[in-house]
Image (tube, rainbow, N blue to C red; front, top):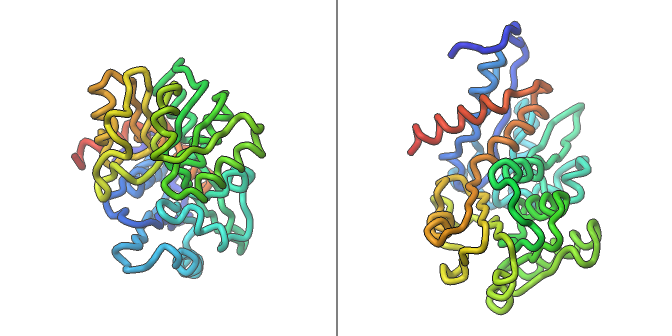
Length: 297
């Protein structure tokens, strides 16, 4: 592949990885490696799939320690480890500390530093993909790591109230309380999925989906199709596949929709910068993502 920058190759080797469950088909490794090649970097990105390794998510600390001893420069962390990894880190960036979730770990000066690039990735994707939509009231499905990033991004961008829903009440309540502490008591509400979701969606401007439902390994809809109303815009953080059943259904009902592809690219660019100290070409990464998506279809 030809390089589009006139910089000499960087002799330093980079070894990074992705930790999560069911990630063997992830496009993130190729996305990172293509950009590194364009920049003349010697860069290897591996997947550490809990499913393939036969390990429970609670073993993320052992994987972290093994990667550090093996000479890794850092790791991306995805479902279901973004919050479990917190107990195994030496320090957190302000964003990761506020979100209580980590998707990027950098090994530096003998320490493990947790970062969160999901927040910036979601915010940029929403701003570019659904410009000028109303965000006064937004329903959030899923209070895990991706959901926390989306909620903080929304409130930072000016959303009036985020209505949090999660099948695990304690997790959803913890996120709502953290949002109220940071942004104000009237900025976040918590509801029960079966009792409060229909009413919340009826009053909302948009719906953000941040659960694994819709991924290749977890097909289906995260809510009854009857609750998806034409007045809503719908954003999904899932990107494998890009056209999830949720987005297909919402589009058919006349909703404006946004897939998770842009979020993947933007958060990957920020993680790449943390790993290497080099500035990625985001427009080029968007093109690479499109090529990879088409090739894997």
